Length: 370
Ligand SMILES: [Fe+2]
Image 1 (cartoon, rainbow, N blue to C red):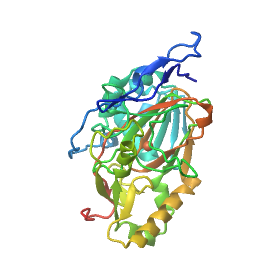
Image 2: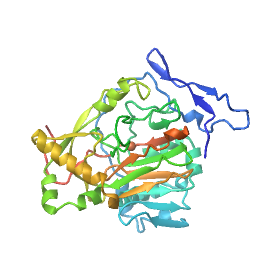
Image 3: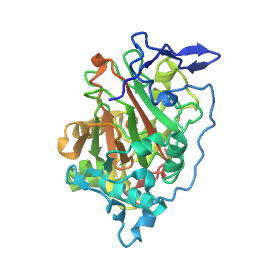
Image 4: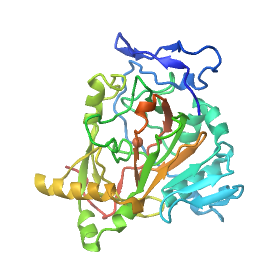
């Protein structure tokens, strides 16, 4: 376990800039080393970003399809375990940081097929630092720059989560009976993320796990008649609430790009595997276009309840130190588990979030305008 010895003071507000200052922890008698990843703590700049512009995404998983053995990047693994039959593979013995371009293409394809991959013992990857993170992520798509979250100073492409005894820079509901909020990251963007990389730099001794669910499996549990209806639907995804949360002074208190809303198909098709996945989530989806208010609410609430109470579609990842997790945000949803507040321990993580294509409707020709 890593212990943060530089404690985080109140975010300083001045000239519209919130900057974290570090000070030595009074209790530290010099026997603890300084925090190894202090340079990756959240920084909130006063920068303002223009709207994102569309781009053509070419998924690297396509290239791996023509490889004679698209799983050869796993040849050096000492173990490859399926976490469940339909979601998640845990790998020991593969150094992600050493993979060449073809190996990274294979990673993209395998994550698309399995939804989620967990790579243990990735100290080399984590210790290569933010320039490497950026280079790694750029292989998989244009890197998303988050409109509100903290990032390492000088590296806005690295999205950070952070919580300790005094501060939280996460988007969390503190007035709900559970902190579980299933979502696909920034699904309000026109081109939401595809293959996503996340790892923890500091973590509590116990707790702070992450839940994942397969939106492919979630969909497969529904009747063909209902799925056929869902294929005809599109829904509004909104970033406004997340922005308001920050404007309210929380999470660093900054909004660097104006929030957006976009319409996506309720069922999307993966560009490489062709698999269909449910693409609505409680955090960002607001309503189904074209239905009456009550109809939209009834269908969305049914789908959210189905996601919530289907452990047969889910896995729960324990963050042993030096674990790197990759998931395909197009076909999965996830939620942090905030169960360690009382311990006062820090949880500090970094996410690399390449954007992918505009979601492809499962129903050919579905009109995605309002
Ligand atoms: Fe997330």
